[in-house]
Amino acid sequence: MITAPTAIIDGEPVAGTGAPISVIDPATEEVIAAIPDAEDALVDRAVTSARAAFERGEWRNMSVAERQKILRSCADAIDAAADEIADLECANTGIPYSQVRGRQVGRSADNFRFFADYIGQMTAELYEQDPNYLTFVRREPVGVAALVSPWNSPITLGSMKVASAIAFGNSCVLKPAEQAPLALSKLVEIIQSAGLPEGVLNLVNGNGATAGNRLVRHPDIDCISFTGGTETGRRIMTAAGENLKPTIMELGGKSANIIFEDADFEQALDGALIGIFTNNGQQCLAGSRILVQRSIAKRFIEAFVERAKGIRVGSPRDAATEVGPLASRRHYEHVMSFVPEASKNGAKLLAGGKRPPAFDKGFYFEPTIALVESNDDRLCQDEIFGPFASVQIFDTAEEAYAIANRSRFGLVGYVWSQNIATIMEAQAKISAGTVWCNTPMMRELRAPFGGFRESGVGAEGGRAAESFYMHQKTVSMPCKPLTLTKLGEGQTA
Image 1: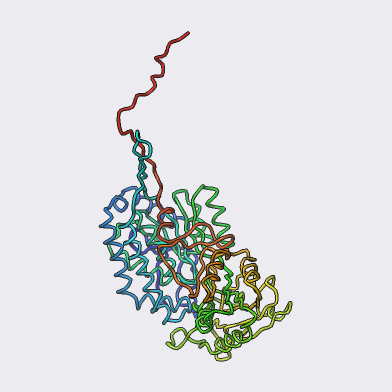
Image 2: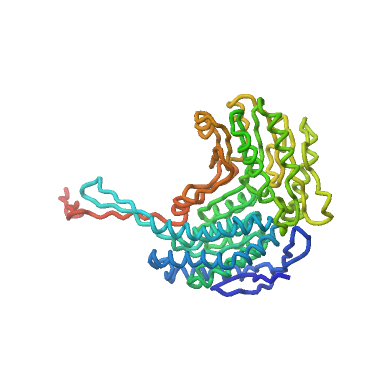
C-alpha cells in the first residue's frame, strides 16, 4: 500500500481521522492507498495556516529575485524526484508511464520556471495625460487561493495552479481530486524543501462533496481556481457567488477538429489521432468531434479507423503502450454507456466500443470511432471524456463552422488546411477559447487558456493569471500644490 497524508499544513504531513477514501489502480482494480477524508477542522486548519502566512507577509513582501529563486528550486526538486512522481501518477491514473515521465512531469517543473520568469518581466502602468496628476497602478496579491485540481492530469494542472497562485505572492490550499491524489500530494511534499515559507502552500485530500465544499465556502478564501466537470463547476461558482469570491473555471469540452480537403493529409491524420487518443482520451481539450470534407472523407476515415485499430492498448507500465485504462470504474461505465448510441439515429460504429479481449480486469476500453449523421446526436453533444471519436462529413466551410459552433461547449477548436485564407477565416469563425491551426494540442503559457459557454469562466496563463491572482490598486497624486475649494468659508446670505 502507498502511504499519503490527509493534509500537508505548515510544511508537515498530517493524518486525518475521516472515513478512508480508497485509491484504485485502474490497471489492476486493486486498492493501492486509503486516505482519510479531511474533516472540517483539518480544512479550517489548512486555510488558517495559509491566511497566517499571508498576513505575516514573509512571502508576499519578498523581493521578486528571491521569489524567483525559490520557484526555480521547486522546479529543480520536481526534476530530481521525476521518477518517483511519474511512478505514482502512472499507478493512480493509468496514463502510460512513457507519457507521464516523458512529458507531464517535465511540464510540472516548467510551470514553476515559467512563472519565475514571468514575474521578472512584469511591467507597471503609469498615466500622465492629466498634467496636474501622476497616476500609477499597483498590483498586490489577492490573499489565499483555493485550488481544486482534476483527476485526468493531476500533476500537470495541479502544479500550474500552485505555481501561478504563489508566484504573485499569494498563499494557497490545494485539494487534489479524490480519485487521483497520490502524485500531486508527493509533489507538494517534495517542494516544501525548496524554501517556501511555512503555510504558503498547504494541501488537503478528501471528497469534493465534503473537504472540497468546505474549502470553497470557507470565509478566509479569497479566490478559487477549479478544473473539472461543468456540473461541479456550477456548484462551486454558486458557492463562490454567495461569498463574492472571484473564480477561474476550466470546465468541459466537445471540441471540433475540422479537416479540409486541402489539408496535409498525413499531418491531419496524425494530429487527429493525437487529439483524441492521447492521455487515454481523457482530456477536456480533446478533438472529439472530427469533421472531414466530403471529397477526402472516404480516404481519411478509412485511414483513421485503420490507425485507431492499431493503437497499442495495454498496461501503462509497458513502454509500448499508447492507451492505458480509464481512470475509474465509474468513468469506464460512463464511457461504455455511449456505445449503444453508436447504433441509433443513423450512427455507425466503425471501431472499438468494447473492452479489449486481452484484459479480464482493469478499466480498459478500446479506441472507438462512430460515424454520425447529425451533430444533434448525443455522441456529438455530450462530453464522453474517453478514447471515443465521432466523425461527421461536411461539404462547405460554412457548414463546418456551423457544426463546430453548435455546441454548449467552446474550449478549443482545431483546423487543418494548407490555404492561409481558409486558416484565417476558420480561426475567426470558430467559437472557442483556443484554436489550433495545423497542429495538435500545444500550450503557450504566456497566452490565456480558457473556454466559452459551458467550457468555463476566466482563463489561466501568464497575464490572465496575473489579473486573477493580483488586485489592481490605482494611486493618484498631484504633481504640484493644488488650490482647493475652501468649504465653510463662503459668504452666507
